[in-house]
Length: 97
Image 1 (cartoon, rainbow, N blue to C red):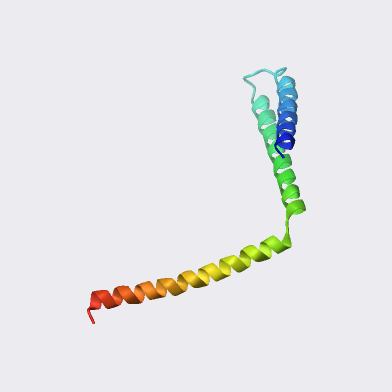
Image 2: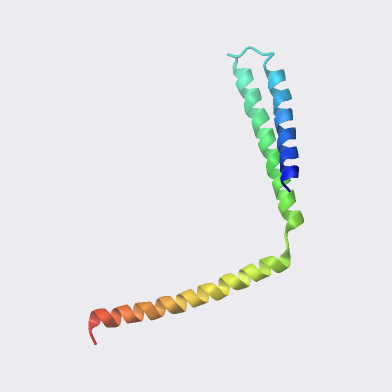
């Protein structure tokens, strides 16, 4: 998994490097340069976001999602029960009955 990440990182940096070389031909003070840089970064961000969403959708497991939802519902039910017991004990302690 880490080799894929390193390969993807290398490719992104390579593309950014070629994009930066193309942008260096313009006048550094021109507003068009800033617009090109902003557009380039925005397109790279959109590409990375789309790739991450695609990877998430490929690795999405319904069984794991169901287990997580079940575990959340059971733990939240237990926490509300124990919170109720704690509150009752606290009121009893403060009231002094």
